[in-house]
Image (cartoon, rainbow, N blue to C red; front, side, top):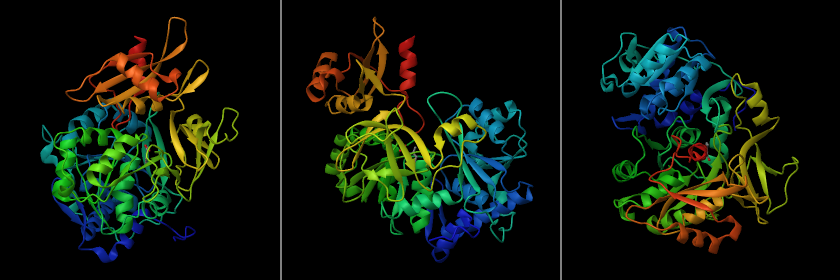
Length: 518
Ligand code: 3SK
């Protein structure tokens, strides 16, 4: 156990843990591999480079890079120097990056060749001036590098490794992650150096049981809190190896890594698992080495987990976390999996379900989820109102609705802002969606509330059918009525080719609501 009364630098902590694993492979990506010794050396060179460039402790740098070895070098190198990496989603627009550059006042940008055009556009439009742009794999920039951009690797090669980590403390700002709500600007969640340590100690090691023999592969990208734990914090906390992939986690891209690199633990999201199971090229059990999978992002329908287990013999361990809490705080666990539920609180976290009056609700009743735990972010940067609303003393309001049964298992009941009250009764869109997904022709479904001629809320479902399958509105309504309380069936059903989603695969119900309001 770490003594947090002493200085604590998370990057240094990981390097010390792996001091005896120098030759072991830490990362493999689309371009090559990086051993533990190389990772430490490259990160310390980067720390020296930032320091020499006049970037000071606590100042921010924007990390806008596809998943590759240089992402990890940049993240840990910045932390080693006490500089704060702001890790951002690579799928956003130049306007989004303008906001993030101005909001974070980043002193530099670390990026890769394929993203140069979008970085260039953002920098041209941003009011805030950035001193340096370092580019990994500049050869992949479609039109070469603008004069002010510098190739990352030659610059790193010129730096001596920084001799010592900056003496940060556990509570010092370590890095930021932006969290997008359904409305408004993204919020910059400020995480400390100690927070990732806690996610590994409470969840990655004891609950998932990861070990140095594992090869981890995460469909969720590193800029996402889920991906950061899966592909950096957890594997490096146990000396495991990691497969990184820059491209989108399509079934084909994922299967290629499963068969080429033989990961033992795969981290995905329900939509991804559903898409893979429906894909013609699904590998046979004998072609892969998966011993366990993890799922987060949205609740995992039981049917998907069961079909996956039947095919691969591996459990999908479903849990829920948040950007603000950094990783998972309620989870199933190997050996105690209840498909269809999110499991129980991860030891070290406390969970409360509160009703509208702010008091804990009884078992069986839906309540708002609050969590208490050591990995909570400090605040949303420069956003006092939203910080106050989310970080309520020792408790963090998650924005999710949950119900706990008499045995202490928690089941997802939708987002607080997506819940529907139909005829005075709460309807969980998720419950209706997961029922629709049990229909053999349905690939995905999203349920929203719409207002009928009388101004009353009714449920409407958008449905995507599996390739080559079809069904009718009547059939689906009857299917839901047979399985749920009849008032829960969707009054309207519309078939669509795809559902709008965030970069991390969450269904954007607000987009469907906007579309419906037109
Ligand atoms: O979406 C989740 O459940 C999640 C899990 C781990 C870390 C972050 C998030 C948002």
